[in-house]
Length: 144
Image (tube, rainbow, N blue to C red; front, side, top):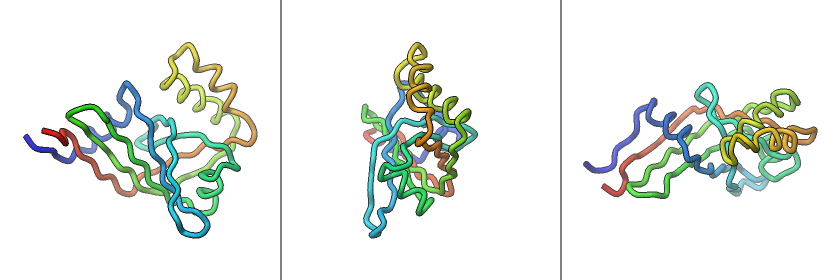
């Protein structure tokens, strides 16, 4: 069977799957040019949640223009990807920031490291960002 788009359920299962893949987040610079950065994320309520420093380029870009896109791909055969486009909601609520920073750290580094990542990244100056999709494109079994 040739490659095919994933169903909504398949997309969200892929995005939440283990082992986790990094997301490649695209934002727009002040001059209109693109900026892409790798990020760690978690799936929550059919949105993608990540943290970033408020003064990072992506943090500044998202505060100015909440539109973003994220590509997540599986680089192993038979290959798959999902591209999520939408707008972000930004929060600086420290309790939520710590909670999600711990969940994200645990997802990528293991449950035994979750608390350390929550403590390190759930601090003032960091942003909790939720990408709510308006459009998703995907493909699975790309190399078949």
